[in-house]
Amino acid sequence: MSRLLDGRSVAATIRADVTERAEALAARGITPTLAIVLPTEDESAAWYVRSLQRAAEKVGIRCQVSKPAAEALVGDLDALSADSEVHGVMCQTPLPEGLTLAGVGAHIAVEKDVDGANPESLGRLAAGVADTFAPATAAAVLEILRSQDVPLSGKRVVVVGRSTVVGKPAALLLLAQNATVTVCHSRTVDLPAVARTAEVLVAAIGRAKMLGAEYVAPGAVVVDVGTNPTSDGGLVGDVDAEAVADIVGALTPVPGGVGPVTTALLLRHVVTAAERITA
Image (cartoon, rainbow, N blue to C red; front, side):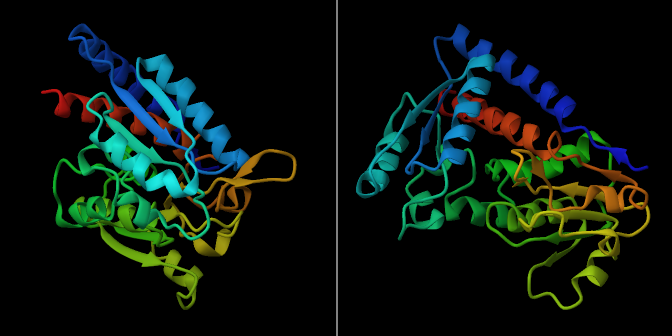
């Protein structure tokens, strides 16, 4: 049976640090503030935003939510980016028809882009600019591996998925740790064979239980980023956990793996932004 990489304990450590830093800001009369723009009536998005609000409140971060019409979305992001009382800005997906994350993300100031939505942030990440905020989910992959002392330098890492939210930024973060990174996607020839070369496998393709036993090498460390809803209201990952359990060395559970760390890191990014902006 593989070892489970518990994200909840990692998240708890991050939240403790965030709480302490938020209290230090409060002592200076500063309340770290996250502004979330929620542009659609998607219930899953609304649920996630509510969970972020609750998490933020517990660590001393103010979280304000706006629900602009599609035609006002860009203007709202511009205004929040210019607001001195706001330290972090994010736009929740899905977006209204005709809009792209890159297009709207370009209206979030880089210094407040706590979830890495601005294309400039991705470019800075690729260039190795140290103070860049990576998308929180991609950063969570690295945080979990780091917390478990998983060596990355020189290791063969395969990332399955090439989105600008997870796959690409995760690959850049892994490259920065001197890993040898292969990025796969739906058109990769013989994807299982490529995935089996990985000493560390990151699954971020968004298809429930797609990666089974034929995708993993014995002893591999597997980080499952997938959060796919099931008919009974639960969640499953992109990896078939039961199929790989007796093969891999370690695996993040779904839920309880990457998800809690993503939320905690997003809050840490807000506090970091507040510290920088008010320094």
